Length: 121
Image (cartoon, rainbow, N blue to C red; front, side, top):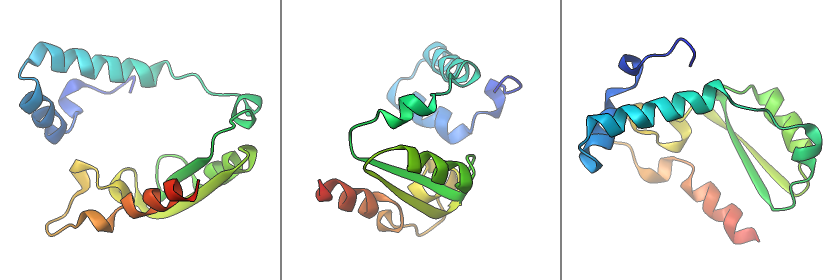
């Protein structure tokens, strides 16, 4: 993100934002806030991760930004954690707008998995 630019932001994101809030100044503000959040991201310690008490479903793509090995290690730190490694890259398994192919179905994505997880508790 330090090297990222507004021009690199997917046009689909820009169009979706402007459809709801037709204000380019607010779009730029949102972009900058998101970029700053990633640039200044603070990692959580193992102790902080181990302190999570709520049931957790960790989901990652096998070609995602975080490696499967990292997500597996994190899942072992969280009590009451479920883990799903889904085929695909970042966002593709969630039906993220820039990854959709013609003829997609919402059931092709992660919603049923999340629904089952939520029904368990």
